[in-house]
Length: 157
Image (tube, rainbow, N blue to C red; front, top):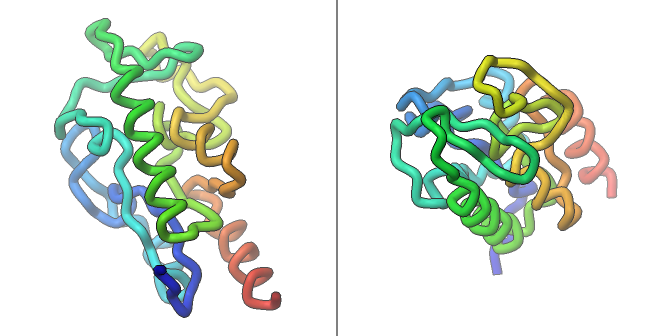
């Protein structure tokens, strides 16, 4: 059984600089990197876990479907990636995740509306929705302060 001294937290691999985003890029996010001294990061990329290539056609969530910019339905790949990410969270006993905002997989609170016009709407990505259904707290990269508070609360227990 995995038992780290610090809590294991799922982290979108692209936020750690892994070149796995739809455009083949990553972005080492300074605030996320700053959390690494307080937790054990478990890098994940649901899109890759679902079998999608890097780079890949940009996709957006439209209701319960995920549709690529060229019209292909990639819902099955996003759902598979979400299940695999949940498996990692459960394997490492992750109480929380910090995931890429606005993504059709990892978005938390806001996602693009499915029209591929960069229009944001309230909602969660496929992976975020599944993780939350299983009691895992999900934060976007602009919410590192909220994750820090959760870690503080866990340390006090």
